[in-house]
Image (tube, rainbow, N blue to C red; front, side, top):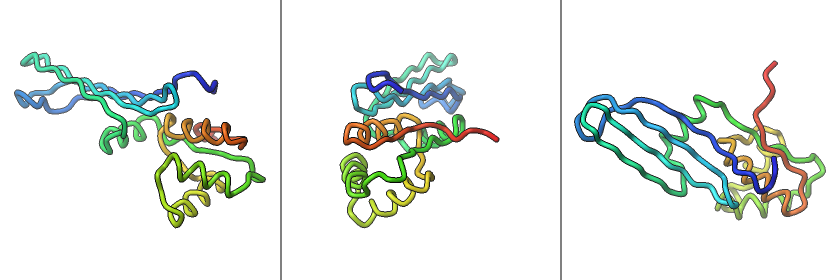
Length: 143
């Protein structure tokens, strides 16, 4: 994926209207743009006319779960010869984890099992490539 191209995933679903309790249509999106992750959610209820738009940086757990359920997990792959110290430094900076936790993440990255939404994995891949590591984000191929 190009380094400047936006990467996003979105979901649409119906849920309870926060105003009247009826069924409302919800839309959620997570996007990687300009080197940052952000999310947006919009709601519209045809029964009462209630509308809502909310956005932020860290993806809410419920919206993330919906995206993973609908689109599946993306994985981060790095070259086997990648220097662990460089990969760990990038992972710590991006994920905000400590030394103990980053070792477990590194193990998953090297095994090809570290996963998340496509925008999340592409952010890691871009930061790793910027540090000189050959990294790719994508979904596993179906058999």
